[in-house]
Length: 358
Image 1 (cartoon, helix red, strand yellow):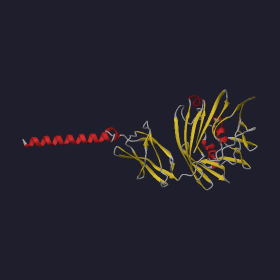
Image 2 (tube, helix red, strand yellow):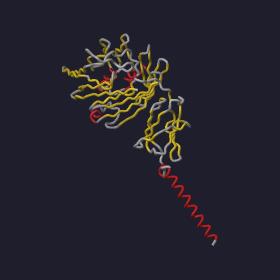
Image 3 (spheres, rainbow, N blue to C red):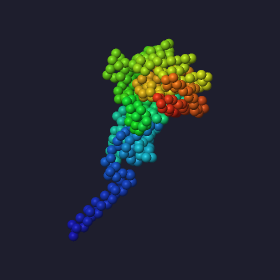
Image 4 (cartoon, one colour):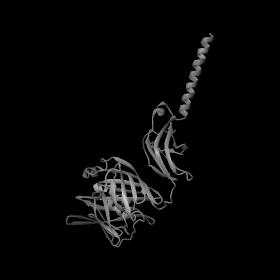
């Protein structure tokens, strides 16, 4: 009889223990499945600033997930659709190199081996992001992180719509309709700038008097596959892989066959950020989305830039010339939007550029 009672007591104890465990699991919002699931497909920038909002995109995030930089727990919040988490580094966070990890369901997952934390400059008023939307073409967004007044990280987000993907299939950066996100790091070393990655490889640019004069892809020499920039005074005159640049009255009126008219312009170019160059870059038939050629413009090392912003866009097709107005949107004194039309071949399209600022 005593043995029977002892067995019943043991069974009740096990059931009670399991019930407590289940309740504890429910209270924590975890179940057996969540413990087995691993956070995956992480996407975030390599360099972050103190005080900056940082988004960590990924799959299988749970509400119980905790983020850490080394052993420092972050005040992180999960996105409403559980597509990632975001955090803001406090002003007193120590700059340095950290490992980002997540603890979820009792399991620790390293999300990024190396995250560089930089002390924030006073970047108020500097361009935070620029987006280029070309109806029937390539749509791109570039987000910038600065240190010591220079761009150190570029987050490049781009898609190609169906028309653009078909029309420029040979040069397309991505398949039609697919979104791609690239994290580009920029390192300044004396008279060289190393950009990595561009198209999966590193590029080195060589400067003289602050102006880029040559560049080459990793694994090649300048003699084999170099890019070369030449100048007339302080103004860029030619990029050998692209063609001629023509300046008149301190403004860039032509790159290869694309033309802008600056007559009686009321708007000034953005200091330290060459918006005029971006307007030429938006013509996909010139740069074909080749960032290795355009990167020195992004990094503002192509000599003097245009003083003003254009008012007309001139499209020449054979003997026919079409002239379109360039329209601007402003918030206070800052340019926040540009729009103009162009003709490539038989197709007329509209380009829209939007800017945001710190």
